[in-house]
Image (cartoon, rainbow, N blue to C red; front, side, top):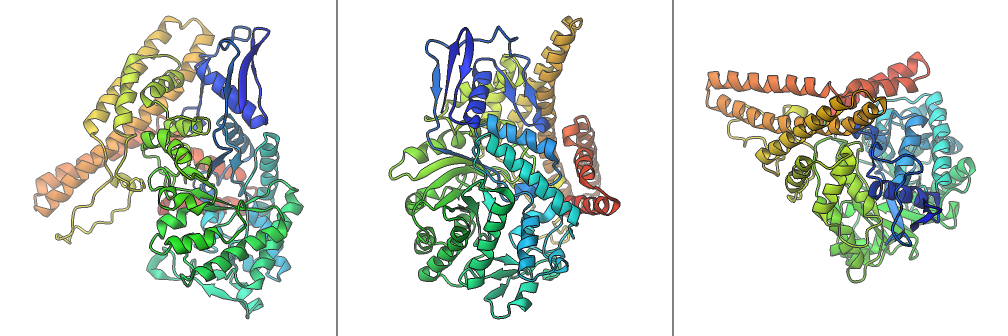
Length: 618
């Protein structure tokens, strides 16, 4: 909650925490000063429209009161750490935390540095550093090692890396706490090093199956899971929570655990599931008596054949009421709250997943985002306690995240056409009717995907060739397309007109250094959007050219095959040239961030290897 009012002819923003004040400041800058704050990679800030100190606009009458309709605004996904944050230093993290505060986030995931904690905990259970080298994933693959999908892949981690990440986590937590956020720390999910099976042969340990490895070999997958019903589970889980408290202090009572994420229990007996859930919570609560279990609800969507109402109720009711919060992770497309009587009474957070795999395709469902959280909150027997952004990768589709972050403060559905007009004015620093028309088109096309397909970006230029042309009976491969490409091309032409208008105006005021700077700041957002939308248009065009080439091959039309193949290759080159015009699309920017974290030649070799592997597997 934050009131915005006036005092001695200056605006005054108040709030109960620093997050409330920061988000109140941004609300004022947006709706009274026409400013815009995005990630640096998606255009950065537009503050040229903010008047000079002493000339700031006043709010009317007694001011306004902006209040959260639900207490929590959650942020991150357990895999965002690998898709987006992996090579970040403190400078970049500080920017992100400030971005969170401006956008009202008060419940962020804080997963950095946990391997250093696990090293200390597991060594207390007689597991050696060598054993842990085959357990921890490399820097770019920590998310999947933490979930028990793989082990050792991309590693081993150096001691310096472990210590460095732990120190970084302490700074992250300190900044989050300064701003009044409640960080969410990790807890024990049962994922263990293989060595524990030898050290504790009587423990109930299961070797899991292959996870996406070549030829189904277990060298890097087939990890080990300690059953939550085993007494050792509670012992390790308690030790991990206590070690975090020792390292960080009493910074939170909320802990994430996803024991059953894409990993079903061995039986569907509700009694057994209830015992498992109780054991998971017992491990948390023995380490922190006030612990609250935050669980991703992805399992109820990805494995819906297993999680029927009896199984869901058994898990959700296995802990004391109020001690579990569920993230309805994919509520923007496949909401679980609707078919579970609002998670059978368990508090939950309405989340937008939106992004898979950190891909940068332009995509969204603005209508659902602007109304879904409101529908869930006001519906009968609602147990909704928050909204959340659970994207797998950030720094893409800024309009989607600007709208979703506002839903933390919207008690009614947003009128999108008016909101998009205001958004375009703020993003580009002024009202331009061609831009308003372009965004209305984008709203009805790119940002109106209703086909309930997970958007992984299946455009042919970014995927491995996986179609066998010799199999003439196989269907043609299909890329994801949910809108009229001709309408989007029209939107692109309208945005191009905006750039011409801005540049022409700049020519008339070229004598003013201040105005030149202001126009450069406006052009950053403009240029990013133009490059991104052009990339999208060319990628969809390349899809059709590719299919034309495949059809020509099947028809044994060598001339047409040669023509369409050359067109496809030329489109690849054109897209490459286009993206080279903006640093935010360059691999080198990412590479530079990774190299900065390496403190010696061995670490430099490690991070470069992880970068190359990550690119090949993306």
